[in-house]
Image 1 (cartoon, rainbow, N blue to C red):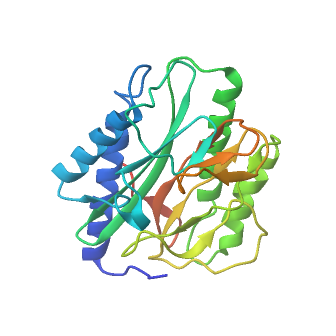
Image 2 (tube, helix red, strand yellow):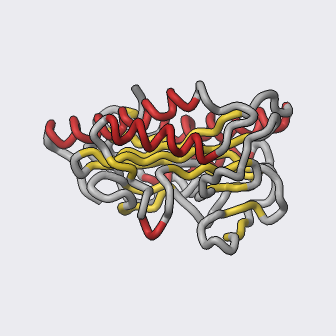
Image 3 (tube, one colour):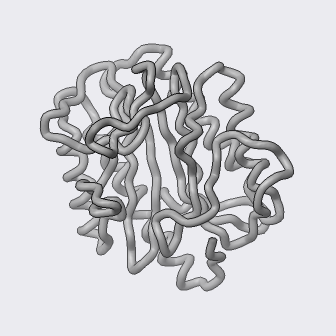
Length: 249
């Protein structure tokens, strides 16, 4: 885990995050029935490149695309495809990373496609709110376990499955850095947060079981019971009294 201290480095991280935020803002115009996940990937890759950055995910460990597009029961790492056409009632989580002059921004957001069911809206809202429950604990001097516990305690009120095989992480010079950030935990445990740490906090919540499996493509992670999943993530900078969200415009 690297602690960012220089104004120059913070400015570069802010720009990486701004580019990711710009992509998410643009996606709001395009996520709708009849659009392929490949089209969404192309929109984001173009925006990332036009803003002087490169897609963090493309080529990472062999991943073939600029974004992860995870529809319905896909939890994370969905591979965009020209054959996957969004339809009314789907939910889709799009995870985007941008590298700007050696610094990464990383954010996932879940979107409704057309009109979705009330239970799907609730799943998404709970996952979104769990992210901010965790963020509310972030500041210099607190234990990382306080953040994880706040996320898990919030989700557990609703009986959803908290994905435990995949976590948030540090981010900065590398796309994935220490520490691992679980979406459940115990207060007063884990590393102590320091001003200047950069973290990607990302609850992944399933409507049913927490259990997942990886499909034969080696990437796509799906729920074991076929029920839907939601995913929200921001990259944040730890400050003395709280945090700054970097992946926004």
